[in-house]
Length: 200
Image 1 (cartoon, one colour):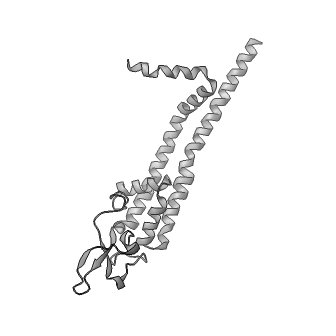
Image 2 (tube, helix red, strand yellow):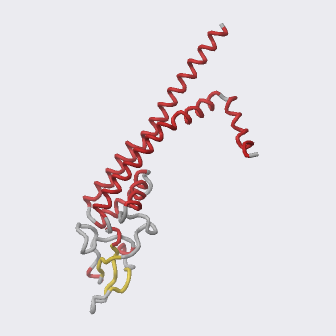
Image 3 (spheres, rainbow, N blue to C red):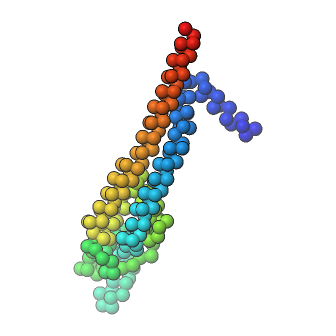
């Protein structure tokens, strides 16, 4: 019964163009595995670099303080400091500073952005953050977070991820599929010409 699910695939044989695409996908799988390996290696390289450079920097948040005692009163809800990350005193850099005139100070907050997923605290979370940037989904937000916590120079890291990861490595998969399509199409055309000569 399970094999009945694959019966509609017989329709592919009736349409040469669809058959060509199916053969292209199948023939490109070995080469796509090589591209996948390259993507994993690139992600790990940027992930390790991110851990070394930015470990713990996404934990900075603006807190309200008691002007008399200096005690932390909780997360600030005033203006853009309610959602922006900030540069903690124990973190090097020239990122966003909270507003002292509003009795605010940048202090440690336990949870990372994105429900704790966006982070360079360990290699797993760093690799996920890098891979998200490589897919061009939310990479600008991650880069702005780095700029808020470290400074404008950290934008170079985000731009490198996009350039190397998204523009070069990810597009290799398209090149591999196109190359396989060209090779399969040439085989089909050659086979078609041979059949034509036989009939003549």
